[in-house]
Image (tube, rainbow over all chains, first blue to last red; front, side, top):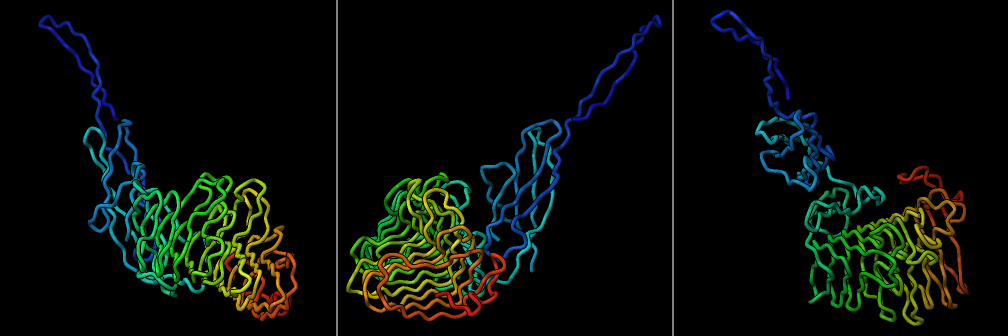
Length: 86
Length: 335
């Protein structure tokens, strides 16, 4: 999550003013740091494991999808880890 | 080689996404199962992919004898407590078996299965009770699922039954007191890996294979070819041999060809014979590779026979994967 500082001044008709400050918080998108395929290369028919390393700046839970050649890979019990036979 | 595109999308709880791409490279060449020694990298393995898991193995797509162009394959398994054959010619495959298998018919094939028990048992897991021409192929058999003491026998034959012509091909055996045994008479053991031996008690006697026919009248005729005997360990028990073959009666033809023995240093023996009658024993021991041993083979127990042994081409291995080397004993003869 990134933040932006907000500053300003409120002034009345008599010219008296008071400053104020605030923060605008922005929720950022997750970051994918790597996608690995193992074993690679491999002969046709090999069961592969695809591992996605990703993080979220806010620490939110992440959901993952993975496609190989347009076909959905099979998720495992470990988030971000899929198997695929190719 | 071709490259398959891999695309991933990651979404956080706020609905924001990130995407990334990779490739999965596919080679067209197959795997040479005829030349490479069986190892944990090329024999059947099980992975926990949910449900009953997935078995991977390298073999011909249709099964049967290995080739120089085999294919790595996988199969999602179905859970089974135990299995019993129900008909001649049956093919049993794709099972995750947590107890055992009993085969009582002829021409039965048990293949592409993960068979596992916890260890500490004095019994056996696969029992070809009767019938003939039974094949066990591309299976992963674990006798000590929890990593401790093993189980007495992986594949055995009920005592006093005669040879069912059993073929055991391209399997991996881990954590057994005896991976194969005991009262066998004939068959073929080919392209298997035997490793991680463990006695079924902390003091039991361990052989990776213990074939010991108790029949005094029918001959032993067994071929043991292109297997790896990894003699590391054992995890429990007392090490005896990688391969221990014995007989009360005739030994018409015992063929030990093109096998690999590794991690034999400080083991009692890599190869042991125990013969107990005066009938001739015919043994052919050829083209085997042996690494790190000072006492590879031995005799035990009442050897009174005349041994007719044909030896040639056996060699010392410079590494665990070497498929050739300097001749054993200077001339390639073991006996």
